[in-house]
Length: 221
Image (cartoon, rainbow, N blue to C red; front, side):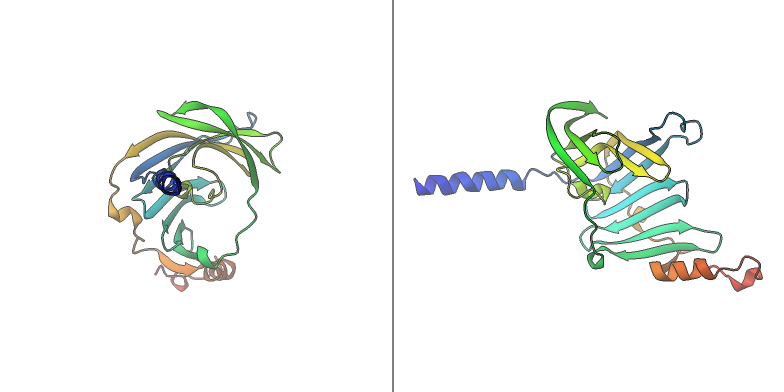
């Protein structure tokens, strides 16, 4: 009897270990503001994710900073944020292992039933957040890791529809393409015209920038 129980537990353990499938490819999310009064002012955009299951590249846009690209080594848990500014092109280094983790702002409850999105059968969550006026329905793929979105590790799978509150308003992210492919390795490199800095160094240069100074005092490195 004991041996049967041991075998059963090993089978269960193995099934859980195989539950998350590695992903090599491209994810494209449609991003739009939820407030109908702001839709004419804030156009829809896309967030594009590339991964080889070890390296991650997320291309996004914000009203404040414009185009942003994050390149992350998911095993080492270190990343660069690529920003183009009038001063210089910067690759801002972050070691996520040394960061104090903020309290996870979402609480959620799993719900029965599935919905289809971008050709995928997704499971449902009812999610609460202090900045939501009411609970929102999120969708996720339970057999894919949360790591491909970088900031949603406490959810039970890869989010394919989710809401993010910002200073501009509430945005909804909806998966519209999931393509298996081998991304070009150059996608995960730091361009030679980007200056590698820490966040503190970046802030120092921004704060000390004098737009009236001669142009050669601020050479690109």
